[in-house]
Amino acid sequence: MPRQTERLPLASPTPGVARHLMVHRYGAPGGRPKVYIQASLHADEWPGLMAIHHLLPLLDAADAAGEIQGEIIVVPYANPLGMDARYGGGIVGRYAYDGSGNYNRDWADLAPLIAQRLNGPLSGEAEADVERVRGAIRAAVADLPSRTPMMELRRTLMGLSADADHVLDLHCDGEAELHLYANEARRETAMGLAEDLGIEVALLEEEAGGGAFDTAPVELWWRLKEHDVPGAERLPVACFGATVELRGKGDVSDELGARDAAGLLRFLARVGATTPAAADRAGPAPAATPVGYRLDAVDTLNAPVAGLACYLKPLGATVQAGEVVAVVIDPAAEPGAARTEVTTQQTGRLFAFNEHRLVQPGDRIAKVAGREPLSYRKLGALLED
Ligand SMILES: [Zn+2]
Image (cartoon, rainbow, N blue to C red; front, side, top):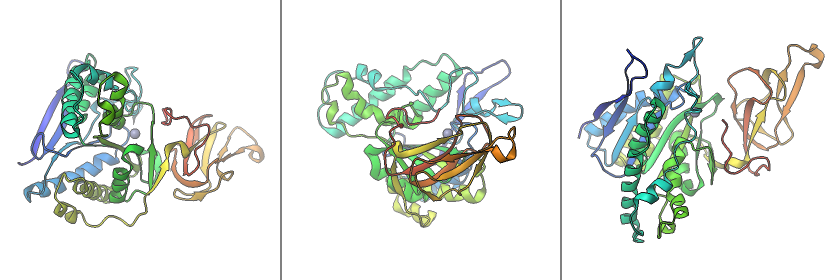
């Protein structure tokens, strides 16, 4: 079946303005595995837009060759609300102007809503139970409130994705190497995704907290047992979700987009959404050695004072606990007393910087992934705001 492209209308936010989402569908509706891919939920993060620009022709070719096996849904831009939220020439992108906060936080915990819609105990037969739960997911999402443009956007994106087998949310960091976030429960899939995309830093957690988009359809599979659903403790974790960080905000180019699209196609083949032949068209994965790190072993370095952040090590560097990674230079101080050192508590890999060089006290300026869990990092509160 050729690609079906839909325009899903969104409520008009103001007279004279119409909004819509684009949705590209490949394969048979209801086919499995179902893979959902979206870009730029944080509307100021654009490498995913470029990756999908390059992915669509690859998928069209795979479709023409009869290589689509499951259902693949691609949303090329997930947040038209955020994309036109400009202030003084820049796109704010990460936070909604309506006061509802970070676009990638506080996605609904569907478990209690699903539990209400499951009449009676689960059977213990995994395949049938997964199907039943997915039906309840769809019913629960359809009943989510959509009074405001933000609520409507959330309900629409969840409606497209929450019953999927795989959910990939394409983001980026400020300045960064490729990395991803996923749940420990599906470590093997996460490492496969990392291999396909050439990602060397895979951040894995048991409970990130924060309610990121990609965690909502995953965590419900074990949260159901907290809501008196007999048999829920035997459910598999039937959804893999990942936030894929496609480097930094400035890393938008045809070359990188084509590389990332090829990686996404390899992953689609890996999980059986396409035949293996589709991955052959994408070529071999880049030479990379994916390493899984616990998210609570990521040291997040904050600026201790206001000033200019200046990094002493490049991205990808191996650093030692106690090492000075950056300095913040106070332009109001005498040059001899202007430099405040920023050390890391972790031995590991320096993989992300703040893209802004003028920082305030408390601004997160760098991230180091290491081996040892850090006592100040708390399960359930592992994501930045
Ligand atoms: Zn983001």
